[in-house]
Image (cartoon, rainbow, N blue to C red; front, side, top):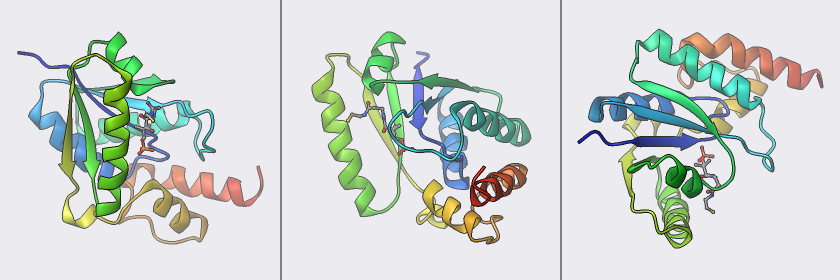
Length: 168
Ligand code: PNS
């Protein structure tokens, strides 16, 4: 049966860790929806549109053709319900991720009657420490981003860091 699968996140910006989860999920299922959260409360570096464009660039350069990008706002479970999604994918890094993800997952379950499963993929060893926040910290301080974000978007992240430093 063709399952509808979503991998949601802030992707501010997409990291090599996200890409790893996307690649592995896209090999498990026929099709994958990457859900970019339109976050009104959290201050993000990149606009929703920019985050989508960066993911698009990465998917193209990696030749991933069975993933489509959507934007969603509000509760994830409402989106899952509306689009009749079967599986929610999340990446798990350290123990601290587990605590947070468990809390969110239990909250999601309490918020909806829709039957769906959450699939946790443990991060690959080289990305266990990696997060978008770390990427931004390295970028704003002029560090080398090659280990952390897909090569194709490095210039975009550097430009954004520079514009933030300039107060633009
Ligand atoms: O990349 P992130 O920041 O870990 O992604 C978190 C995200 C966007 C998947 C999560 O915060 C989310 O689902 N937000 C939508 C609002 C919601 O449904 N929150 C969960 C119940 S508290």
